[in-house]
Length: 44
Image 1 (cartoon, one colour):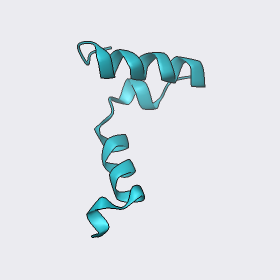
Image 2 (image 1 turned 45 degrees about the vertical axis):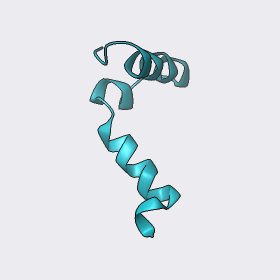
Image 3 (image 1 turned 120 degrees about the horizontal axis):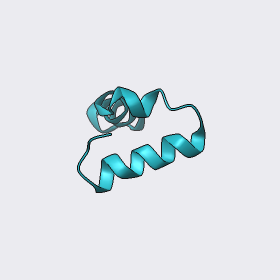
Image 4 (image 1 turned 135 degrees about the horizontal axis):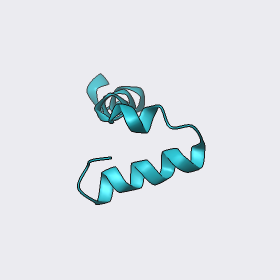
């Protein structure tokens, strides 16, 4: 049951992100990199 909890799912997804996304310098830059990673070829 805990595997489907919000915190558990969120941590898994955050840990799967590329380090370039996590260390973005602004929210705008984070969103741009995240969208590219999600919808394109998953490279920065």
